Length: 203
Image (cartoon, rainbow, N blue to C red):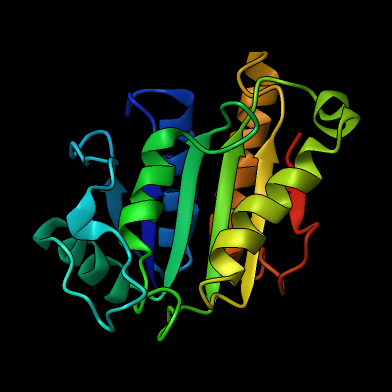
């Protein structure tokens, strides 16, 4: 299977980068192919301007060349995996802007949808599980991101994986990296049909 690994962090040499590389290692061992989309590293512009604004009066609008390049990259892969830090109980603005611009009308939703069967989001959070559950933040993220984005755009099997207290101590970090590598090795068995609680913790 060809997997587009969408990495969103200002620094490749970060814990988020190590998590992405751990997933890649497991996936490669399982025989998958990995293509990286390093949004910060590639200098992707997340700001949606009029040329990429969805137009409900037009069918199959021609968007900017940058967006069509990203669409082609998504299309040539069979699954999408996103790795990112959890900021303000959501994904970074860079990743949200990539979704805003690229997952556009009549390609990801509207007249057409994505053809991928599997999607996975791996988010790193500083809070502990109790903090995530206190105000139902995990459920809210599960509705907003995998369900509200991936399911809405036609990806039937998807999941949000949360790494709580990421980087809190070396032992936990090594354990979480091993778990993520395992996820790569069993992908796509680590995802499931969509639901508004399709999230799990890796502690």
